[in-house]
Image (cartoon, rainbow, N blue to C red; front, side):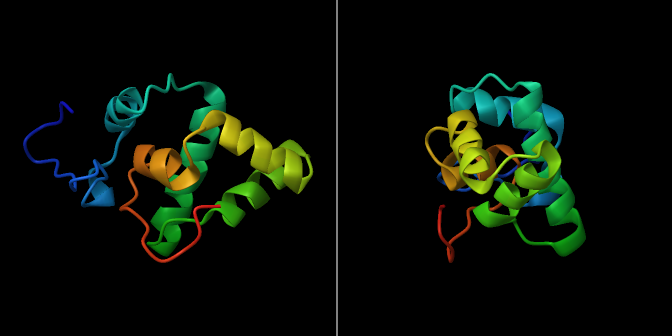
Length: 110
């Protein structure tokens, strides 16, 4: 990854400090996951960042699914399917990483 020297990642490529995140970092993290970010990706990533900013914890997958249900007016199954179509290798592996979260260790990957 090509980040400024001040940006530190763990051995798996997650940001050590979520405060270091910005859209340029997200684009680079997405590139390492072979994801071309679309407006649908950004909608989820920005929700995750708002959640983290107010609570100082990464949202688990159920929070993102609830957001998609409310925001898009779809049922939970459709929301979860959409989430995993956008991040096909998993919520933690891709969405959390690209959103600048530290790697979650204690909850379900959804």
